[in-house]
Image: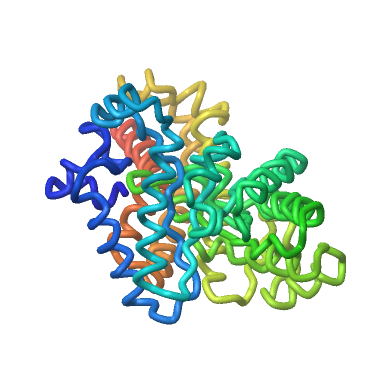
Length: 379
């Protein structure tokens, strides 16, 4: 809810005044706001059969003054507050959009007991989506959770795996093996629950961790992971034959070694190739130059730069590598920016470049400028 509650117009609907991440479900205007948002989504997707109403990671629920007062006076729990609000939202979907089934994340009620879930009346109204993006998720624990939901009256369950974004808030490259392992674990869970209970698996791809975080992996970088995960879920295995099929789809000869120069022929493959070069080649080379190069460390340290002095003999050990790397960084910067602008709006490109390229590029540029300045001050 951050993208709404960050605005002053809606700030009074926050559960906790200082934090825009959680809606106060007790405010009279809160439910109409959610209903209006649902109406906007359905207007754009009139043929939708399912509608995901979100509701995960409602961290501050129960911490607002109204919630605290209600819990103190009635002895209800945070889970029960959540379930009451979820019932109001899903009832609206059912009555306003017949034939559309609401989906909701399950994490806020994982700890709730069967009695609370059953008595809430939510089960007939919504299909729960269990999320876990770890390659070593606890299969037996998930099976037990599904069994609890079934006993509580939920008729359909979804799983949520991931193909990108779940390995770090500021990742630039997608770990195919991580996501392949995650999807593999979910198939193990699927094999241990009643078939009629599982509605499907949502293969999620994160854009950001929340509304205020930086962008994680861009979609073009993650398309090989999409292909691998989809084919794995389709075939139930990742055999050599399936792997070769994926390579054929992508126009790639290599999937495991990101540092290889194989870029593929899929849409966005140029962005994939350039970001791979950035992360596997240029950044490590820059880190080596700035942090491990014996000539920079020993003869052009921060002290030498401050006093603007360098041994002329050492210039020939530092300047060629610096100039060459500077040229390659400039070329990649320009090419990557141009490629990204063909896919993303300028604001997104500017943000990604500022976070992932410019800080390193500017360090290299500063080194080159300080080296040139020292050369103007001969010993």
